[in-house]
Length: 301
Ligand SMILES: NC(=O)C1=CN([C@@H]2O[C@H](COP(=O)(O)OP(=O)(O)OC[C@H]3O[C@@H](n4cnc5c(N)ncnc54)[C@H](OP(=O)(O)O)[C@@H]3O)[C@@H](O)[C@H]2O)C=CC1
Ligand SMILES: Nc1nc(=O)c2c([nH]1)NC[C@@H]1CN(c3ccc(C(=O)N[C@@H](CCC(=O)O)C(=O)O)cc3)C=[N+]21
Ligand SMILES: [Mg+2]
Image (cartoon, rainbow, N blue to C red; front, side):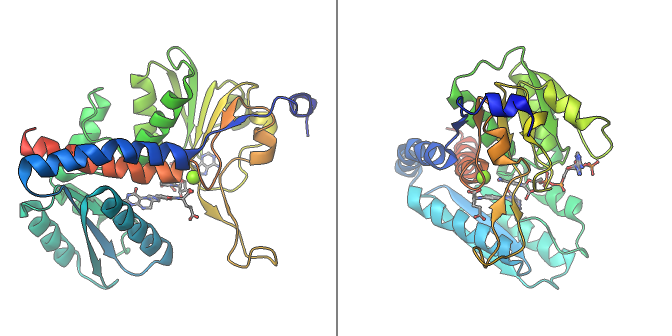
C-alpha cells in the first residue's frame, strides 16, 4: 500500500449508509402514497416483468415487490418462461400500457438473448417507464430536464446530496458508460454542475483519471478494479458494482463486493458507499419514488 493510504488511516472515511437513506426515503413516500390513494381511490401500481429464472433477478424482483407493499404501492409480478417469444413480451407490455391500474412498468434486465431488449424497452409507454430507459426519458435527461430518471444513478445523486458536500464545480469521474448506470449518471452530475468525465474499457490511464476526481462513481462490474492509491485524498467514492466472489469456506454462497477495494479506499476517501448496503437499497427506494411520480403525473396531480 502507498504511504498516502497509510497516512490517512486515522482519518477513516465516512461510510455512506444506503440502507438507512433508503428507509428514510420510503418513510417520506408513505404519506404521499396514502394521499394518492385518498385522492384517486386506488393505489399507485407497479408491474414487473421477469423473463426466465435467473436466480439473482428473481431475488431482486421479489425484493421490489415486498418494498412496494411495505409503503402501499400495489405491485404485480409477471414471470414468463425463458423461451417466451419477443412478441409475447411485447403483447404483455401493450396490455400493461393500457391498464388503468398500472402506473409503472419495469422489464427486469437482462432479457434472454433471443429477445431484442431495445425493441421491448421502446414499447414501454414513456409515462410508465419507471426505469427511465425509454429514449424519450433518456432524451429529457440529456437536455437537462429529467422526468423519470434511471433509479440507480438517481439514487447515487440522492446519496451525494444527503452527504451535504458541494457538487458544483467539482471534478466527477464516472467509470462505465452503460445506458442503465454510467451515461445517465454523467448526465445527472452535469445537472449538479460538476465537471464530468466518463471512462470506459478503452480509456487510457484510468488510475490517473481517478486521481483527479473529487467525486468518483464506479459502475463496471469488475471486483477490486479501483485501488486505494487511485483515489484522491478526500474524494467521495460511490461504488455501484455488485459482484459475487467465488464461494470459500467462510462464505459458501460467495461474498458480494463492489468494484472498489473498500478497505484501501476507505482509508483515503472522505466518504464511500459499502457493497452491500450502499447504492443497491437506494436503487429500489428510487424505483418506488418513480412509481409514485409516474402515478401522480398520469393522474394529473
Ligand atoms: N447497485 C445497483 O443498484 C446496481 C448495480 N449494478 C452493478 O453495476 C455494475 C455495472 O453495471 P452495468 O452498468 O449494467 O454494466 P455493463 O456491463 O452494462 O457496463 C459496464 C461498463 O464498464 C466498462 N468497463 C468494462 N471494463 C472496464 C475497464 N477495465 N475499465 C473501465 N471501464 C470498463 C464498460 O465499457 P465499454 O462500454 O467500453 O464496454 C461498460 O461501459 C455491475 O456490477 C452491476 O451488477 C447495475 C445496476 C444497478
Ligand atoms: N429493468 C431493470 N432495472 C434495474 O434497476 C435493474 C435491472 N433491470 N436488472 C438488474 C440491475 C441490478 N439492480 C439492483 C437493484 C438492487 C440491488 C440491491 O438491493 N442490492 C443490495 C443487496 C445486494 C445482495 O446482497 O445481493 C445491496 O447492495 O445492499 C442490487 C442491484 C437493479 N437492476
Ligand atoms: Mg450496494
